[in-house]
Length: 556
Image (cartoon, rainbow, N blue to C red):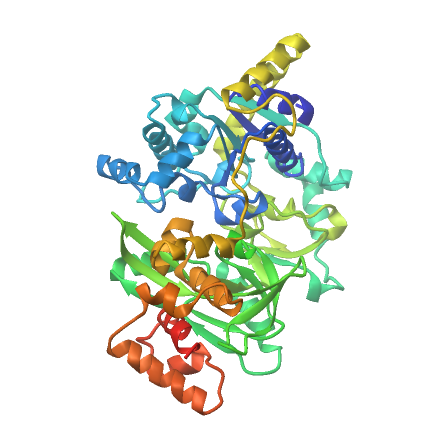
C-alpha cells in the first residue's frame, strides 16, 4: 500500500495498524497525519512502547500517558486510583486520536491493560474508550518482553486488538535503503530465506572502517557497550566528575527502579564525553535518547552542561524516578539523567537511520536483533561488520506465520477504499474531523488562552502560595526544575524571596546547618556550589534539599 492510500484511510477515523519494512516511511506517514490533524484543530496523543522510541516522534511512553506506569497487573483498586487523577482523566477524555509507535515491543497483556484503563477513564465501553487508535511498527523487529513472569505475546494476539477491528496498512515503498543488493539481502532475512549469497555479502563487510571515531557502534549486550564507553572516556585527559545515584524508600522498589533506569548508579563524566539523556524534560529541551557532548561543568554547582546536536547547551540537573501510590511516594531514585554514548545497544538504535555503523552481531540472542541492526544503515557500503551468529539472521517464527495475514488484510483494505467515490471518502474525512471537535477549514484555530513562558507559569502558581512540590505536581515537572525556575525568577527580580517564598521557607536544625555551610563558603569567597556543600555536610543531604535552602541563603 502507498503512503497516500494509507493516509486517506487514517483520515476516516478507522482504527489502523501501520506496518512495513524499515525505511518504508511509517514515521513519515504518521508525521503527515499528525500535521493534518493539527491543521484541523485536533491534537493527537503521540506515544510509543519505549522511551527511546517516544523521542523519535516527540511523544511519551504509552505507559506514562495512560497512567499504567510499571504495573504488571491491573486491579479494581488501581482503576479507582487512576480515576482520582483529575489531569489523567481530563487528558484521556479530551483525546480523540491515540498513536502508539513501536507496537511490536508492546506485550499483548500490556495492551489489554491500557484498553481497560482507557475504557474506565473515558467511561466508554468501546475498545480503547472509543478513540481512534493507530498502532505503528514492524513486527519483524524486536519482540515484546513480558513482565511478571508471563510468556510474551505479540500485540496482535491481544483481545483488545481483535475488538478494535484494526485495518492493516502494509506500506510497500522503500525510502531508506537505496542499494538494491542490500535491500534484497534484508528482504531475504525478512522472508526467512538465508542463502549462501547473503552470507557472502555479509562476510565481505568484515572490514575496518576508516572513520571509527565518529561512527556509531552497535552491540547486542550492555556489557559490550559499557566496555567501549569506559575505554573512550579514559582516553580523555583529566579526572572524571563523579555523580552518585541516591535512593529513598522501599528496598525492593528501589532495586526495581534501578533496573529500569538507563542512568548508572555511578556516573563518570568528563568534558568532551559523548552522552545520551535518559529521561524526558520537554520544558528544558531534552528527551530520553537525546544525544550530545559534555561541554563543561557549571561553576556554581559542578553540574554537567551538554551541547546537543542542535547546538543548544543544556545544564543538567538531577532528576527523580519514583514509584507512587495514592499520592504517596513509596520509593525514588535521584541521578543525573545521562549515560555515556560512544556505543549503544541495538535496542536503543531502533528507529534510527544511519549512513554508516560499526556493529558486532556475534552475540545476538533475540529474534530480530540482527535485522534491526542491519536495517539501520542505508547501503551495504555503510555496513562494517565485526561478526554475526546464526541467531542474528533469524526473525520470529510467529511473525513469519502471521505476515501473510497482514499482507492480505492490507490488500483488502486498499481494494475497498480504492473503489469508493471521492466525494464519499471526503465526507468520511469531514465527519471524523467534526466528531473530534475540529474545524473543516485548515488553520482555523479555536480560542486559546494567551501563552505565557514556562517561568511565568511557575510564578503564577507561586503567587497562589503553592510549595515547590505542589508546583511540580501541578505542572508535571520535577521539584528540581521548579527550583531552577525560582532561581531564574529571583535573578530577574520578578519575585521576592521573603514576600513570595516565605510559605515554604525551610526550618529546623538541618536548614541551619546548611546555612552555616553556605555562609562559611561565602566567607571563604567560594561560590555557593552544591557539590562542595554536600561534601561538607554529608550524603544524607540531597541536592534538592540543598538547592531549596540556597534560594534563601544566597539572598541574605
